[in-house]
Image (cartoon, rainbow, N blue to C red; front, side, top):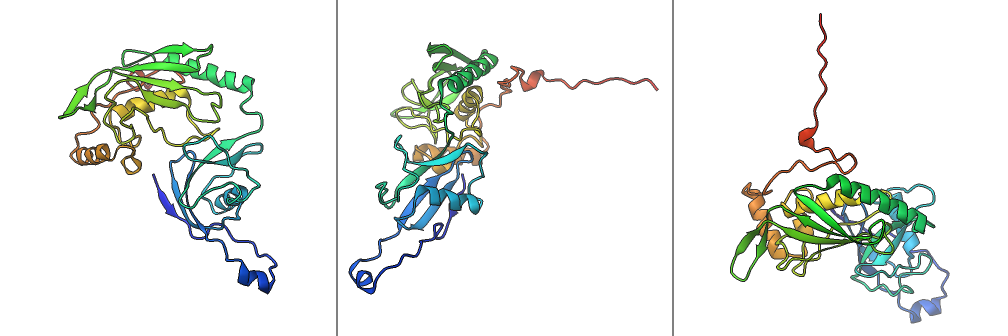
Length: 292
């Protein structure tokens, strides 16, 4: 994850104010905000944001300065308070949206009508196809509800570590629930371990919640790719484990120490391609012998 300091990202518009009101009304204190961007897991620190700035103005400036990519026509960005489904009103000020200083805002992408039933069912059918392609000895699953499924119980037969009261112990089988909620694919899946104790990992909480990073419609991975990414997390792959944005600080310290020692990942696996079902081990280069 990158962490970028942005100085005064929003310019405060000048207003015509009389000398009397200047003396009697104190200037509002700027807000200190953290933004979590979609797609690349970047954290943007905004130390001085005027409370009268709107979410739309924040997004416009971040796009103009290259901190967010421009999106195709019909797709836009929205801001929400992290950990909630409360979307900020684009046209209202941060103050009117009741955003406090120190808040963390999540950036999502959205498009008018993208969550329609037809669009959602098409995406779910594509996810079901990917899930069929990755099914095998190491990853198996059971659909829990819906047709096409809107939730899966995935069984991973891969080594990982769990923390008991006295030590770290290796566990070879893990169960994870992937729930594709009503706002999916605009909103990310909810991913949670069923086993207790949960796997000891920087991005897995003690109660089993798995942090999958940040989600962007049009840029996000299909469900099969996400299921494989979680498999790599269980094996402690670099690149999918993020100890610098950890929900388990003790696991983050352990991970970094063992990564430096070369003890991680526990295994390297040639997972199948969710689009084709072909694993890297089975790919072959065609060679044609040409006679002189």
